[in-house]
Length: 350
Image 1 (cartoon, rainbow, N blue to C red):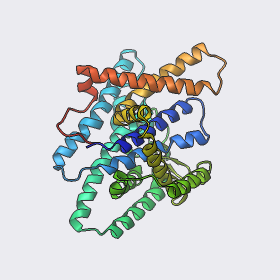
Image 2 (tube, rainbow, N blue to C red; image 1 turned 90 degrees about the vertical axis):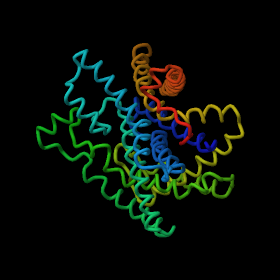
Image 3 (cartoon, rainbow, N blue to C red; image 1 turned 90 degrees about the horizontal axis):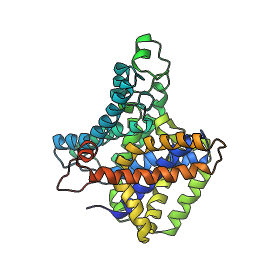
């Protein structure tokens, strides 16, 4: 059974991600961009709330591959075919980049999230099953998460942006000029896995969250204090997790703020319908929105040579609206649904 508050929260996280990608077309820094970087950890945490560890392992792998890997490969291979026909790429290095699956090795950078989320969910299921078998206490489990997050934060720079010395690797991983992280962003797995498992630990509280002013005000104060602070910066795709304490405080206070605002919005039908629809379909929106934004900014550059800051919100709203409309089109097309959406099942899951 779906949880309306979680669906709305996923929708808000999705809107943050799209807003960030819209801003990034014109700006490389700023507190609004930093806010948008919180969308990824928020969505991963929420994905852990409803993670199912009782399903047979083979079925879990098939379902995650169908939901996350199938649309990733369909879109990028379709793009590769179009580029190859136009003579704009080397097919071999393009395929290597697609299967390597990190932001710098694929043409649609945000799609790195799909294979990584698949890896994170399957690893999370395995870890949770192991913890249950070992009969971890809640305290042991929390200690494990704290250590996992610390290890992940310390190891980020071991692989990311190290020089590609070997000419062979430079040719294989074009257009990456530096080492683009491990395949499927494996080097950030300890951090994303911590967020996913934390979502599972907090699942009973998230599902029954009630509105409380004091924790909301404390979370808002921490958020406002840290969001402009470079010492609390986060951008998982760029391997930025600036501080074990400050960044973690920012992320988890943001999660509480998100859930509180989602609870308020659940009483406003128009907002409920809009954000819950985005939340339910966020992954397919993620798949399509970057193509739309790119086209919109190309047209904006052509028709609006005198660029202004207020144009970015207009392009963002147009991109979000067109992405939602395109999702509706995909859902109504049998062929597109088969290629991009998970196979229908009797159960409903997050």
